[in-house]
Length: 155
Image (tube, rainbow, N blue to C red; front, side, top):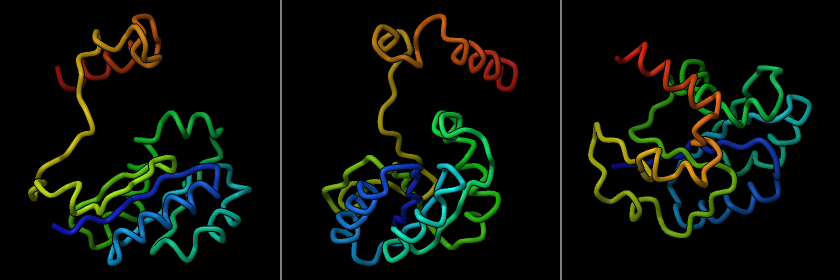
């Protein structure tokens, strides 16, 4: 199965460049679709820094503040898919965030992944992480809102 990358970033362009160079060195025929979610005023600089390392560059066009964009990455990915991703030819997408350092070929990392499957980095019950993971703290309003959404939408 051919794996391509959706590279999500919003800052630290030097780190992004270094991580993409490493990824490219280990995966010669890889296609990388960049998704920039930082300040719109930095979008052209981001494109210039990474242009020779990515096959496509998409800017999340909302003026929302960078913290919101970071916190709501799922919504940014959804907009990318609706605006751009659904029109690109790809078989499998690996969502790589800017601060991930990949040190093996993707085919080696995802060797068992079959068509129609999803591979998650980890899944744990909320109560096993709520003592140390900020997003899972018992009284986190975002967590409570998410639980209500899941209950209402999916029973």
